[in-house]
Length: 252
Image (cartoon, rainbow, N blue to C red; front, side):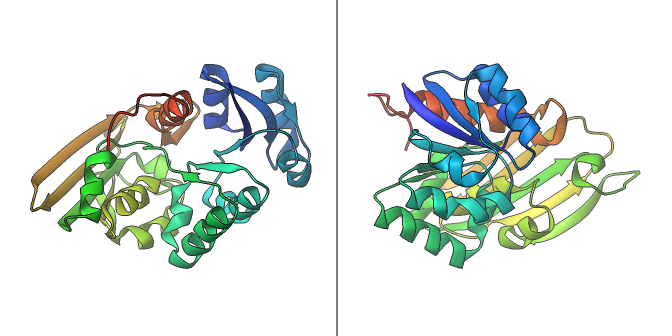
């Protein structure tokens, strides 16, 4: 059974703890210690009041379910301490300098960084862009104004630009844009809409290349207690954990 340490004990952390398979949550850390304690009682792990004692515990994988800031602050340390890193806040990798440094640490210590599919589908086939360049890659995301922290009485465009720019303005909302960019090998174009009429997080992906054309539309149910995050994002981590040591690998 895989032994993991959970970094971040908010909504997604609770979903992981309550629905985990093929893994044991050994250690938990959150900057708000009572949240780690609460979740530890649910999953039977040990809550740690500081990161240093957390990362010294005996487990193989750090599951980051906190924030872009936490990923940047603790990701390299986790790898240097011999842990593999499962990174939900993939927006941290939008910074080329940080990404290069993080992967350098992983290589130096023989560790790996895993990025779950998150709130979208189709990342496996978009990897063909690393071999046959994708000429056009667009992510059109629509969320409720409240989840984006903006006000809107009707559907309106709140951002248009590149993924690495969008993640700076909305670090908790468009991690999927960075995941798309990493998979495809090019910076995705992003259109972000606030719409008071929607109750789900909607992601539309359009891609064109020598392979043809791709159109994907995902309508996600928001995570319980946190409308900024899709429930599918949490489930993608659980699926990754379940299949880490599987003898059968499905998908590119």
